[in-house]
Amino acid sequence: MSRIVVAYHSGYGHTKKLAEAVLEGLQGAGAEAKLIAVADIDDAGWADLDAADAIVFGAPTYMGGASADFKKFADASSKAWFTQKWKDKVAAGFTNSATMNGDKFSTIQYFVTLAMQHGMIWTGTGLMPANTKAATRNDVNFVGGFTGLLAQSPADASPEEAPPSGDLDTARLFGARVAAVTARWLAGKNASA
Image (tube, rainbow, N blue to C red):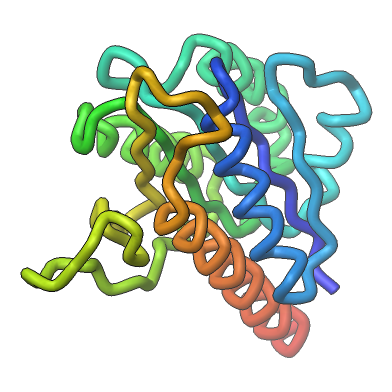
């Protein structure tokens, strides 16, 4: 069973709700998974990250990039980078913002760069977009993320109201994909060892 950590920051609760849906997908696919809120990370949290087979990064997009609390966590991960503790772990990422675009892809690109600096293996969504005239807001991958999971929560919506069900379904499918990719990666590594 693969061990996967969802390391996330949530400013208002919407991104936490998304992280919980990713966690459901991971666990539903058979992974041993847990959430770590990076704003409150302690030594045990860092140890969980170091022991994980995969790390899923998550943060809201604020002003075109990852939140400051997530960036603080990423900067602190330089200790793991120095000793290459996260090298060859699977990585993935998700973000949420108030607008449909909101420059969310800048946050996903930041997560990819962070993962590459750590020598990790990136996993995208593997999901087709809902891009037909018949598509509705509650369809899977309506926001159209490929490199990472993208979600949208209106600025005046509470965490009980948003992200919408389609984005949460997308998060569960994304979690299941990360679990499957991690299991496949580990099987390949073990077979070649």
